Image (tube, rainbow, N blue to C red; front, side, top):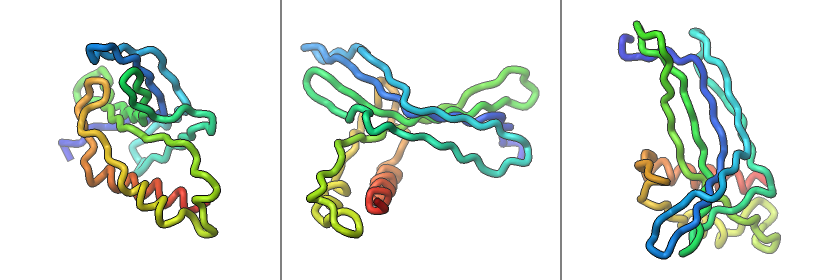
Length: 157
């Protein structure tokens, strides 16, 4: 019980970042997008928090070329306070969301996606590098689960 930090608020957002990549590989942030955000205050009797985020249909896709990189991130901030301290701290977790173009209608079947499309989605490989200097904090098992969840959501159409 003494290891627990009291939580006061949870907030999350979907944000995009676009980088120009120089000839020598240097990255310079050229644009930032915020697509959706939500927050909820947490009270001592709160057991869980549910936040709703949405990505507009017009959102740009994730890309990586020799000259430009565009990533979409989900960022979660948890506001906590160490017992005995007056100031608050933020615990932040962020992970990439791969945004792709919509699936062509001919690749859809009556009850979801064709087997070929499902297999392609399951083969998506996530980079082992950090994002913009942040270390990778999401394990490959979690990324695999996120792939499966995305596939499940696509099949519910």
